[in-house]
Image (cartoon, rainbow, N blue to C red; front, side):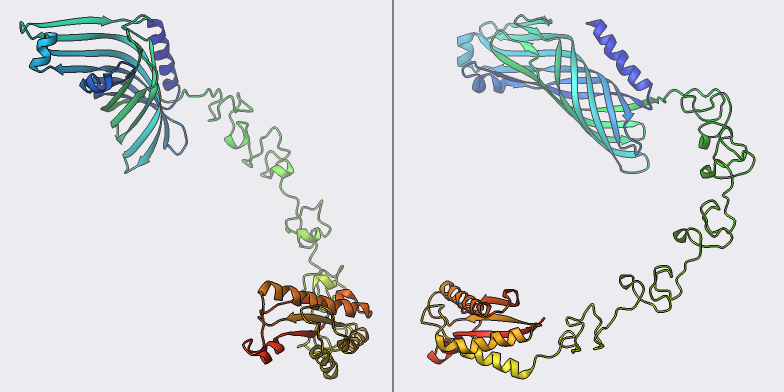
Length: 501
């Protein structure tokens, strides 16, 4: 076991010594207790209340290894002596003492460990040299030694007896386990080189073999104060030519150079190493192998790529000036109207207005017919046409509770079909409405069926189906009072609305 202790200590020491870490000497008091579970009848009510925590101490070393460049995340392994265990105290009254001849019974279990906590810690700055720290992680404990002590005062003789037994490692009853594993957390303050923390640890494994069926797990709550001893630093990398670039990063490890050229010489200090610089004595650019940029007209385009090497231009036109006479962003080679500003979509020309009505073709719904701005460039719909359609709408009737159009309405609808066929730029919106008599869902359904019937009839008369929309609104849009028969009659209607396409 001693060899195992030495091996763990050596590994921990190597980890800290070959990194930029700090050592702390820490120590302090703590309270140790044992969480026991068993199946002994009445144990929870009779024996368990008499078990208390015992005072112990912790002392050892904690490392402090940074894990990121910002310096707020650390790995804190430790090597600590931890005194754990518990104590038991029972005082019997006269009646019980007379029966078992025991007036007082005290016992204690002391288990000492070499403990290695492996914590990951986060540090929050509170000032120039003070930080709040909080961390947690697992721990592994190695049994060092232990003992159990019992004290009895007899009732009959008032005699005091003390017995002490050494705790040993083994699998037999009353033996301890070699290893204990658990988790721990630590929080506190780092004040310069002083570390003041509180901690709690909880064992996760059974550390003791009792003569009865039971499990025993350590719990420790305590505090410690630590003092920084010294700070280690990483070994200095080898640098044969002493140029500040380590040999493992130096492309020329035996010749002094610069960091910018990976450790190789650079006589003209242009960032290109002499061994690849075609103009080693004249500062240049890596793009041109260390030579100056060949740019006669100084327009940023080198002469090999510049179609106008003696005239300053732009990269967009391969070193030539931008040919855009009218300044509309379309160069003259692609501009169909090079002397008149336009847009790219029309090859540099202004948006045309074919019918000359003041609305350009992109916004004009009738680009070949002179119209008005109010009607999106289309001619106004003639009043007599609108009146004919409105008349037809007022004379569309259906059988009661049906979508069948009565025959007297068909002549007016035929006129509407004739108007639509004669005016191909017109579209028609057929809108159906009802009164509020009956269920709203039924009214909506019948209104939709009726406008579908009107649309179907107009299509049967030769009107393109895509020029007609049919929408039933049911009772949603009344135009009169539904509380009177007259108002209800007005609300049961079909409206025909012309739309200029």
